[in-house]
Image (tube, rainbow, N blue to C red):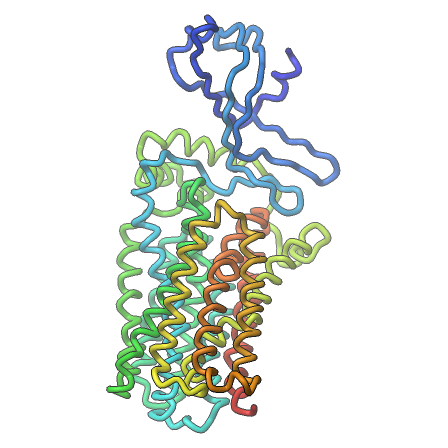
Amino acid sequence: MQASTHLIKGNLEVKISKRRDLPCFREFKERKSTLTRNLCIRRGSICSGLTSGAVSMGAELARARDNVETVARSLIKFRSVKAQASGGDVEDLAPINPHETSTGTVLPFVGVACLGAILFGYHLGVVNGALDYLSKDLGIAQNAVMQGWVVSTLLAAAAVGSFTGGALADKFGRTRTFQLDAIPLIIGAVLTAIAQNVQTMIIGRLLAGIGIGITSAIVPLYISEISPTDIRGALGSVNQLFICIGILAALVAGLPLSRSPVWWRGMFGLAVIPSILLALGMTYSPESPRWLFQQGKISEAEKSIGTLYGKERVPEVMYELRTAGQGSTEPEAGWIDLFSKRYWKVVSVGAALFFFQQFAGINAVVYYSTAVFRGAGIASDVAASALVGASNVFGTVIASSLMDRQGRKSLLITSFSGMGASMLLLSLSFTWKVLAPYSGILAVVGTVLYVLSFSLGAGPVPALLLPEIFASRIRAKAVALSLCMHWISNFVIGLYFLSVVDKN
């Protein structure tokens, strides 16, 4: 069957089971033989890559180099970490699928990177409970516009940080960029904690915003590049989970405010601790093997692979990296290329995901839920906001377990549908007179359900999906553009929401 042999090239792991009734299998003393396979069918601009699966195939390999003359009814399992990306490019999304025993080695480094995600969430949520108290101390209690600037300055700076994060990570490496990022995060936290006027507060928020903008770009990038293939979806959701934990930590940190109004300074100052831990942790974390390989630092890449997956995996992972490097010979795309006929559709999808994520209103809840609950007559407004934050964490944990089983699309549909229904309940609680006696309780229930729905899909899916749909030559710039849409939308909501509420 010569036609069959022409199909077998590239990356294919063949597991040949021993069968008593087939004498040819007795010749196999090893349990695995590695063959290569790369089936790539191109017509026009379409290139289809192989994905993981299990196939039963009958094949006869005549005069094969390994002295096997006949192989009948063999069980073939192949794993390719290639996925079809935009514009007809076939990409390797991860270097290798290491043995299950290596996962425990990877997790501590994922945890260190997630300190950046915690800081992301903490800086977003810290103004929720503190805004009224800091406004009184800084003399802007009656100025809703200036309060909006205190909130949204962080977001405008984060848009700048998200653009620069990818470039810094490509130039200096992932771990060094984390360490550099700790500088604005620490200084920003200190300035906001000691601010005696609104100008110092805004400068501190600007610096912190640049810091979290950079982390928004490099945390998922680093996690994706060091994660085993079979759990990349779950670990990608861990990034969103720790953002939610950061938000929850900020809301819980606000609980003492009712007894100590000046505690808002301590709330901002607490962000210094994870910033320092992030810088120190990255000193001992391995650099991304993919980045080291791309820089030609082969020995360092092998050392990093050994730390992450074990020394026995080094040859296999290096082979995969070399194969991945041969997947596309095109140069890196420029900004104009993102809007070319070849790429504009997939780039638009990435930007639209974050646009709808933000304008669905999630960060209005993150920034102002305490004020909304107070207006609805909830006595324990900060505690109610903490409950909302807890529901966000709970939903994200569920999403982590569903991500690789249910698929991204189904989770997005379920998530946005649930958010719409929850917002309908919330609006009815404020507009229907018959529900007026229960408006406070319904406001909390509607908000909790809304945040829970968000955390099931609209929250974690977009950031996880972007590296999977963008080809490598546009990935860095396309992710940066999508994140910029995220931060611009976030900025508009943070700036104008409170003013709109006060006018109604």
